[in-house]
Image (cartoon, rainbow, N blue to C red; front, side, top):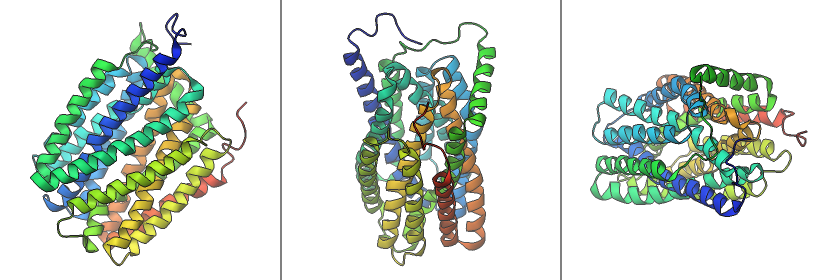
Length: 411
Protein backbone atom coordinates (compact mmCIF):
# COMPACT_ATOMS: atom_id res chain seq x y z
CA UNK A 1 0.00 0.00 0.00
CA UNK A 2 1.37 3.35 -1.01
CA UNK A 3 2.12 5.80 1.75
CA UNK A 4 4.70 7.74 3.67
CA UNK A 5 6.02 6.30 6.97
CA UNK A 6 4.51 7.94 10.01
CA UNK A 7 1.76 9.57 7.97
CA UNK A 8 -1.09 8.12 10.02
CA UNK A 9 -0.15 10.21 13.04
CA UNK A 10 -2.24 13.38 12.96
CA UNK A 11 -4.11 12.09 9.92
CA UNK A 12 -7.24 14.22 10.23
CA UNK A 13 -5.57 17.63 9.68
CA UNK A 14 -3.76 16.22 6.65
CA UNK A 15 -6.98 14.76 5.22
CA UNK A 16 -8.85 18.01 5.72
CA UNK A 17 -6.05 19.87 3.96
CA UNK A 18 -6.11 17.49 1.00
CA UNK A 19 -9.87 17.50 0.56
CA UNK A 20 -10.18 21.27 1.06
CA UNK A 21 -7.38 21.95 -1.45
CA UNK A 22 -9.07 19.63 -3.93
CA UNK A 23 -12.47 21.28 -3.46
CA UNK A 24 -11.04 24.81 -3.70
CA UNK A 25 -9.36 23.88 -6.96
CA UNK A 26 -12.58 22.29 -8.20
CA UNK A 27 -14.48 25.50 -7.43
CA UNK A 28 -11.92 27.71 -9.19
CA UNK A 29 -11.62 25.55 -12.29
CA UNK A 30 -15.41 25.29 -12.58
CA UNK A 31 -15.79 29.05 -12.19
CA UNK A 32 -13.70 29.82 -15.25
CA UNK A 33 -14.68 26.69 -17.18
CA UNK A 34 -18.41 27.37 -16.90
CA UNK A 35 -17.89 31.06 -17.54
CA UNK A 36 -16.12 30.07 -20.75
CA UNK A 37 -18.78 27.54 -21.76
CA UNK A 38 -21.55 30.08 -21.25
CA UNK A 39 -19.79 32.87 -23.15
CA UNK A 40 -18.47 30.62 -25.94
CA UNK A 41 -21.82 28.90 -26.46
CA UNK A 42 -23.40 32.25 -27.24
CA UNK A 43 -20.28 33.53 -29.02
CA UNK A 44 -20.44 30.64 -31.51
CA UNK A 45 -24.04 31.52 -32.40
CA UNK A 46 -24.08 35.32 -32.12
CA UNK A 47 -20.55 36.38 -33.11
CA UNK A 48 -19.36 33.47 -35.29
CA UNK A 49 -22.83 32.72 -36.74
CA UNK A 50 -22.33 28.93 -36.69
CA UNK A 51 -25.15 26.66 -37.82
CA UNK A 52 -26.47 23.72 -35.80
CA UNK A 53 -24.49 21.39 -38.06
CA UNK A 54 -21.27 23.35 -37.48
CA UNK A 55 -21.83 23.39 -33.72
CA UNK A 56 -22.07 19.62 -33.65
CA UNK A 57 -18.98 19.27 -35.86
CA UNK A 58 -17.10 21.55 -33.45
CA UNK A 59 -18.12 19.31 -30.57
CA UNK A 60 -17.18 16.17 -32.49
CA UNK A 61 -13.67 17.45 -33.26
CA UNK A 62 -13.09 18.06 -29.57
CA UNK A 63 -14.36 14.57 -28.79
CA UNK A 64 -12.02 13.02 -31.37
CA UNK A 65 -9.12 14.84 -29.73
CA UNK A 66 -10.07 13.32 -26.38
CA UNK A 67 -10.54 9.91 -27.95
CA UNK A 68 -7.00 9.88 -29.32
CA UNK A 69 -5.28 11.28 -26.23
CA UNK A 70 -7.23 10.24 -23.11
CA UNK A 71 -5.71 6.82 -22.48
CA UNK A 72 -2.05 7.70 -23.25
CA UNK A 73 -2.23 10.62 -20.83
CA UNK A 74 -4.04 8.51 -18.23
CA UNK A 75 -1.36 5.83 -18.40
CA UNK A 76 1.28 8.53 -18.07
CA UNK A 77 -0.46 9.74 -14.91
CA UNK A 78 -0.28 6.25 -13.40
CA UNK A 79 3.34 5.69 -14.40
CA UNK A 80 4.97 9.11 -13.90
CA UNK A 81 2.86 11.68 -12.02
CA UNK A 82 -0.68 12.73 -11.14
CA UNK A 83 0.13 16.38 -10.40
CA UNK A 84 2.04 17.48 -13.50
CA UNK A 85 -0.48 16.28 -16.09
CA UNK A 86 -2.97 18.52 -14.28
CA UNK A 87 -0.62 21.48 -14.60
CA UNK A 88 -0.01 20.82 -18.31
CA UNK A 89 -3.73 20.38 -18.84
CA UNK A 90 -4.40 23.86 -17.51
CA UNK A 91 -1.90 25.29 -19.98
CA UNK A 92 -3.74 23.74 -22.94
CA UNK A 93 -7.13 24.75 -21.55
CA UNK A 94 -5.97 28.34 -21.12
CA UNK A 95 -4.54 28.46 -24.66
CA UNK A 96 -7.74 27.13 -26.23
CA UNK A 97 -9.92 29.50 -24.24
CA UNK A 98 -7.91 32.63 -25.05
CA UNK A 99 -7.74 31.78 -28.75
CA UNK A 100 -11.51 31.21 -28.89
CA UNK A 101 -12.17 34.80 -27.88
CA UNK A 102 -9.84 36.11 -30.59
CA UNK A 103 -11.21 34.34 -33.69
CA UNK A 104 -14.54 33.74 -35.43
CA UNK A 105 -13.53 31.75 -38.53
CA UNK A 106 -14.82 28.16 -38.30
CA UNK A 107 -11.45 26.46 -39.12
CA UNK A 108 -9.71 28.44 -36.37
CA UNK A 109 -12.48 27.64 -33.92
CA UNK A 110 -11.82 23.98 -34.67
CA UNK A 111 -8.20 24.53 -33.56
CA UNK A 112 -9.39 26.05 -30.28
CA UNK A 113 -11.41 22.92 -29.53
CA UNK A 114 -8.42 20.67 -30.23
CA UNK A 115 -6.43 22.64 -27.63
CA UNK A 116 -9.38 22.51 -25.25
CA UNK A 117 -9.68 18.74 -25.75
CA UNK A 118 -5.96 18.18 -25.07
CA UNK A 119 -6.32 20.14 -21.84
CA UNK A 120 -9.08 17.89 -20.60
CA UNK A 121 -7.24 14.75 -21.76
CA UNK A 122 -4.23 15.64 -19.59
CA UNK A 123 -6.49 16.27 -16.60
CA UNK A 124 -8.87 13.33 -16.91
CA UNK A 125 -8.29 10.66 -14.32
CA UNK A 126 -5.28 12.39 -12.79
CA UNK A 127 -7.48 14.56 -10.54
CA UNK A 128 -9.55 11.69 -9.08
CA UNK A 129 -6.48 9.45 -8.78
CA UNK A 130 -4.57 12.22 -7.00
CA UNK A 131 -7.20 12.91 -4.35
CA UNK A 132 -7.99 9.21 -3.83
CA UNK A 133 -4.35 8.31 -3.13
CA UNK A 134 -3.44 11.40 -1.13
CA UNK A 135 -6.60 11.22 0.99
CA UNK A 136 -6.01 7.48 1.51
CA UNK A 137 -9.43 6.82 3.07
CA UNK A 138 -11.52 4.48 0.87
CA UNK A 139 -14.58 4.90 3.06
CA UNK A 140 -14.57 8.66 2.56
CA UNK A 141 -13.64 9.10 -1.09
CA UNK A 142 -17.13 8.53 -2.57
CA UNK A 143 -18.51 11.41 -0.52
CA UNK A 144 -15.54 13.62 -1.41
CA UNK A 145 -16.10 12.95 -5.11
CA UNK A 146 -19.80 13.73 -4.78
CA UNK A 147 -18.92 16.90 -2.86
CA UNK A 148 -16.50 17.69 -5.69
CA UNK A 149 -19.41 17.53 -8.13
CA UNK A 150 -21.43 19.91 -5.95
CA UNK A 151 -18.56 22.39 -5.65
CA UNK A 152 -18.11 22.12 -9.40
CA UNK A 153 -21.70 23.28 -9.81
CA UNK A 154 -21.33 26.05 -7.22
CA UNK A 155 -18.22 27.34 -8.94
CA UNK A 156 -20.02 27.04 -12.25
CA UNK A 157 -22.95 29.09 -11.01
CA UNK A 158 -20.59 31.83 -9.81
CA UNK A 159 -18.74 31.71 -13.12
CA UNK A 160 -21.88 31.96 -15.20
CA UNK A 161 -23.07 34.89 -13.10
CA UNK A 162 -19.76 36.74 -13.32
CA UNK A 163 -19.04 36.11 -16.98
CA UNK A 164 -22.65 36.47 -18.04
CA UNK A 165 -22.57 40.00 -16.67
CA UNK A 166 -19.06 40.56 -18.02
CA UNK A 167 -19.98 39.28 -21.49
CA UNK A 168 -23.00 41.58 -21.54
CA UNK A 169 -20.95 44.57 -20.34
CA UNK A 170 -17.71 44.28 -22.32
CA UNK A 171 -18.46 41.74 -25.03
CA UNK A 172 -18.37 37.94 -25.27
CA UNK A 173 -14.95 37.76 -26.93
CA UNK A 174 -13.22 39.79 -24.22
CA UNK A 175 -14.94 37.80 -21.47
CA UNK A 176 -13.73 34.55 -23.06
CA UNK A 177 -10.12 35.79 -23.17
CA UNK A 178 -10.33 36.65 -19.46
CA UNK A 179 -11.54 33.13 -18.62
CA UNK A 180 -8.48 31.70 -20.38
CA UNK A 181 -6.04 33.94 -18.56
CA UNK A 182 -7.66 33.02 -15.24
CA UNK A 183 -7.45 29.30 -16.05
CA UNK A 184 -3.69 29.69 -16.44
CA UNK A 185 -3.56 31.14 -12.91
CA UNK A 186 -5.48 28.10 -11.61
CA UNK A 187 -2.76 25.94 -13.16
CA UNK A 188 -0.18 27.82 -11.10
CA UNK A 189 -2.23 27.02 -7.98
CA UNK A 190 -2.01 23.30 -8.81
CA UNK A 191 1.74 23.52 -9.33
CA UNK A 192 2.23 25.21 -5.96
CA UNK A 193 -0.36 23.49 -3.73
CA UNK A 194 -0.77 19.92 -4.96
CA UNK A 195 1.78 17.45 -3.61
CA UNK A 196 2.39 13.74 -4.20
CA UNK A 197 3.21 12.14 -0.87
CA UNK A 198 1.37 8.91 -1.63
CA UNK A 199 2.35 8.37 -5.25
CA UNK A 200 5.37 6.32 -6.29
CA UNK A 201 6.32 6.77 -9.96
CA UNK A 202 7.84 3.95 -11.95
CA UNK A 203 11.61 4.03 -11.35
CA UNK A 204 12.78 1.67 -14.08
CA UNK A 205 11.52 0.44 -17.45
CA UNK A 206 8.92 3.19 -17.39
CA UNK A 207 7.57 2.53 -20.85
CA UNK A 208 7.27 -1.19 -20.15
CA UNK A 209 5.45 -0.33 -16.94
CA UNK A 210 3.13 1.97 -18.89
CA UNK A 211 2.23 -0.83 -21.30
CA UNK A 212 1.55 -3.14 -18.36
CA UNK A 213 -0.72 -0.53 -16.73
CA UNK A 214 -2.65 -0.12 -19.97
CA UNK A 215 -3.12 -3.88 -20.35
CA UNK A 216 -4.35 -4.24 -16.78
CA UNK A 217 -6.82 -1.43 -17.26
CA UNK A 218 -8.07 -2.98 -20.50
CA UNK A 219 -8.41 -6.35 -18.80
CA UNK A 220 -10.44 -4.90 -15.93
CA UNK A 221 -12.69 -3.06 -18.39
CA UNK A 222 -13.45 -6.31 -20.20
CA UNK A 223 -13.88 -8.77 -17.31
CA UNK A 224 -15.60 -6.63 -14.67
CA UNK A 225 -19.27 -6.53 -15.70
CA UNK A 226 -20.03 -3.46 -13.61
CA UNK A 227 -17.17 -1.51 -15.12
CA UNK A 228 -18.27 -2.58 -18.61
CA UNK A 229 -21.85 -1.55 -17.83
CA UNK A 230 -20.75 1.91 -16.74
CA UNK A 231 -18.62 2.34 -19.85
CA UNK A 232 -21.45 1.35 -22.21
CA UNK A 233 -24.00 3.56 -20.45
CA UNK A 234 -21.51 6.44 -20.47
CA UNK A 235 -21.06 6.13 -24.23
CA UNK A 236 -24.81 6.38 -24.78
CA UNK A 237 -25.40 9.29 -22.38
CA UNK A 238 -22.46 11.30 -23.68
CA UNK A 239 -23.48 10.66 -27.26
CA UNK A 240 -26.86 12.14 -26.39
CA UNK A 241 -25.24 14.99 -24.45
CA UNK A 242 -23.72 16.38 -27.64
CA UNK A 243 -27.12 17.95 -28.29
CA UNK A 244 -26.31 20.45 -25.53
CA UNK A 245 -24.14 22.32 -28.03
CA UNK A 246 -27.36 23.17 -29.88
CA UNK A 247 -29.31 24.31 -26.80
CA UNK A 248 -28.59 28.05 -27.35
CA UNK A 249 -29.72 27.80 -30.97
CA UNK A 250 -32.95 26.01 -30.04
CA UNK A 251 -33.79 28.67 -27.47
CA UNK A 252 -32.98 31.52 -29.87
CA UNK A 253 -35.20 29.85 -32.49
CA UNK A 254 -37.99 29.61 -29.90
CA UNK A 255 -37.91 33.33 -29.17
CA UNK A 256 -35.14 33.77 -26.61
CA UNK A 257 -34.55 37.52 -25.93
CA UNK A 258 -32.66 39.38 -28.63
CA UNK A 259 -29.95 40.13 -26.04
CA UNK A 260 -29.68 36.61 -24.56
CA UNK A 261 -26.43 36.70 -22.58
CA UNK A 262 -27.90 37.47 -19.15
CA UNK A 263 -30.95 35.27 -19.75
CA UNK A 264 -28.80 32.30 -20.72
CA UNK A 265 -26.56 32.92 -17.71
CA UNK A 266 -29.61 32.88 -15.45
CA UNK A 267 -30.71 29.59 -17.00
CA UNK A 268 -27.28 28.10 -16.37
CA UNK A 269 -27.32 29.27 -12.74
CA UNK A 270 -30.76 27.74 -12.16
CA UNK A 271 -29.53 24.52 -13.74
CA UNK A 272 -26.54 24.45 -11.39
CA UNK A 273 -28.81 25.04 -8.40
CA UNK A 274 -30.96 22.08 -9.37
CA UNK A 275 -27.83 19.99 -9.86
CA UNK A 276 -26.50 20.94 -6.41
CA UNK A 277 -29.73 19.78 -4.79
CA UNK A 278 -29.76 16.54 -6.77
CA UNK A 279 -26.13 15.77 -5.94
CA UNK A 280 -26.70 16.52 -2.24
CA UNK A 281 -29.43 13.88 -2.31
CA UNK A 282 -27.04 11.43 -3.98
CA UNK A 283 -24.10 12.23 -1.67
CA UNK A 284 -25.81 11.09 1.52
CA UNK A 285 -27.03 7.83 -0.06
CA UNK A 286 -24.36 6.81 -2.56
CA UNK A 287 -22.85 4.03 -0.40
CA UNK A 288 -26.12 2.05 -0.21
CA UNK A 289 -26.54 -1.20 -2.12
CA UNK A 290 -28.16 -0.59 -5.52
CA UNK A 291 -28.19 3.20 -5.11
CA UNK A 292 -25.76 3.83 -7.98
CA UNK A 293 -27.74 1.68 -10.41
CA UNK A 294 -31.17 3.05 -9.48
CA UNK A 295 -29.98 6.66 -9.39
CA UNK A 296 -28.30 6.37 -12.80
CA UNK A 297 -31.35 4.78 -14.44
CA UNK A 298 -33.84 7.23 -12.95
CA UNK A 299 -31.69 10.18 -14.04
CA UNK A 300 -31.73 8.88 -17.61
CA UNK A 301 -35.51 8.56 -17.73
CA UNK A 302 -35.94 12.04 -16.28
CA UNK A 303 -33.50 13.34 -18.91
CA UNK A 304 -35.51 11.79 -21.73
CA UNK A 305 -38.57 13.71 -20.56
CA UNK A 306 -36.56 16.93 -20.37
CA UNK A 307 -35.34 16.53 -23.95
CA UNK A 308 -38.86 15.87 -25.22
CA UNK A 309 -40.05 19.04 -23.51
CA UNK A 310 -37.22 20.99 -25.16
CA UNK A 311 -37.91 19.49 -28.58
CA UNK A 312 -41.61 20.34 -28.69
CA UNK A 313 -41.64 23.51 -26.61
CA UNK A 314 -43.60 26.27 -28.40
CA UNK A 315 -41.69 29.04 -26.64
CA UNK A 316 -38.26 29.60 -25.11
CA UNK A 317 -39.68 29.50 -21.56
CA UNK A 318 -40.97 25.94 -21.91
CA UNK A 319 -37.77 24.93 -23.68
CA UNK A 320 -35.75 26.32 -20.79
CA UNK A 321 -37.68 24.06 -18.39
CA UNK A 322 -36.54 21.05 -20.41
CA UNK A 323 -32.93 22.24 -20.30
CA UNK A 324 -33.12 22.66 -16.52
CA UNK A 325 -34.07 19.00 -16.18
CA UNK A 326 -31.55 17.49 -18.57
CA UNK A 327 -28.60 19.75 -17.69
CA UNK A 328 -29.39 20.18 -14.01
CA UNK A 329 -30.19 16.59 -13.11
CA UNK A 330 -29.35 14.00 -15.77
CA UNK A 331 -25.93 15.05 -17.00
CA UNK A 332 -24.66 15.99 -13.54
CA UNK A 333 -25.93 12.91 -11.72
CA UNK A 334 -24.92 10.32 -14.33
CA UNK A 335 -21.42 11.78 -14.61
CA UNK A 336 -20.92 11.77 -10.84
CA UNK A 337 -22.34 8.28 -10.30
CA UNK A 338 -20.13 6.93 -13.10
CA UNK A 339 -17.02 8.41 -11.49
CA UNK A 340 -17.85 7.01 -8.05
CA UNK A 341 -18.79 3.61 -9.49
CA UNK A 342 -15.57 3.24 -11.47
CA UNK A 343 -13.44 4.53 -8.60
CA UNK A 344 -15.01 1.99 -6.24
CA UNK A 345 -14.00 -0.94 -8.43
CA UNK A 346 -10.47 0.15 -9.37
CA UNK A 347 -7.13 -0.58 -7.60
CA UNK A 348 -4.87 2.38 -6.86
CA UNK A 349 -2.05 1.61 -9.30
CA UNK A 350 -4.30 1.77 -12.38
CA UNK A 351 -6.81 4.34 -11.08
CA UNK A 352 -5.93 7.23 -13.41
CA UNK A 353 -5.91 4.81 -16.34
CA UNK A 354 -9.39 3.52 -15.49
CA UNK A 355 -10.75 7.03 -15.22
CA UNK A 356 -9.18 7.67 -18.60
CA UNK A 357 -11.04 4.63 -19.91
CA UNK A 358 -14.20 6.25 -18.53
CA UNK A 359 -13.28 9.46 -20.33
CA UNK A 360 -12.52 7.38 -23.41
CA UNK A 361 -16.03 5.97 -23.25
CA UNK A 362 -17.33 9.53 -23.05
CA UNK A 363 -15.26 10.47 -26.10
CA UNK A 364 -16.34 7.44 -28.13
CA UNK A 365 -19.94 8.28 -27.35
CA UNK A 366 -19.39 11.93 -28.22
CA UNK A 367 -17.69 11.16 -31.53
CA UNK A 368 -20.32 8.64 -32.61
CA UNK A 369 -23.21 10.59 -31.14
CA UNK A 370 -21.96 13.92 -32.47
CA UNK A 371 -21.53 12.55 -35.99
CA UNK A 372 -24.93 10.82 -35.92
CA UNK A 373 -26.74 13.83 -34.48
CA UNK A 374 -25.00 16.15 -36.93
CA UNK A 375 -26.27 13.93 -39.74
CA UNK A 376 -29.81 14.00 -38.36
CA UNK A 377 -29.63 17.78 -37.93
CA UNK A 378 -28.42 18.34 -41.49
CA UNK A 379 -31.24 16.18 -42.93
CA UNK A 380 -34.22 16.87 -40.67
CA UNK A 381 -33.36 19.80 -38.42
CA UNK A 382 -32.95 20.42 -34.70
CA UNK A 383 -36.23 19.01 -33.32
CA UNK A 384 -35.79 15.41 -34.59
CA UNK A 385 -32.17 15.61 -33.42
CA UNK A 386 -33.24 16.47 -29.87
CA UNK A 387 -35.75 13.60 -29.91
CA UNK A 388 -33.03 11.20 -31.09
CA UNK A 389 -30.80 12.27 -28.22
CA UNK A 390 -33.68 11.60 -25.81
CA UNK A 391 -33.97 8.06 -27.12
CA UNK A 392 -30.24 7.49 -26.53
CA UNK A 393 -30.54 8.63 -22.91
CA UNK A 394 -33.57 6.38 -22.39
CA UNK A 395 -31.69 3.40 -23.86
CA UNK A 396 -28.88 3.94 -21.34
CA UNK A 397 -31.44 4.00 -18.54
CA UNK A 398 -33.02 0.75 -19.68
CA UNK A 399 -29.65 -1.03 -19.88
CA UNK A 400 -28.63 0.07 -16.39
CA UNK A 401 -32.05 -0.61 -14.83
CA UNK A 402 -32.18 -4.17 -16.20
CA UNK A 403 -28.58 -4.99 -15.27
CA UNK A 404 -27.74 -7.31 -12.37
CA UNK A 405 -24.94 -4.98 -11.32
CA UNK A 406 -24.86 -3.28 -7.91
CA UNK A 407 -27.61 -5.48 -6.44
CA UNK A 408 -25.65 -6.94 -3.52
CA UNK A 409 -22.83 -6.01 -1.16
CA UNK A 410 -19.41 -6.76 -2.80
CA UNK A 411 -17.56 -9.73 -1.32
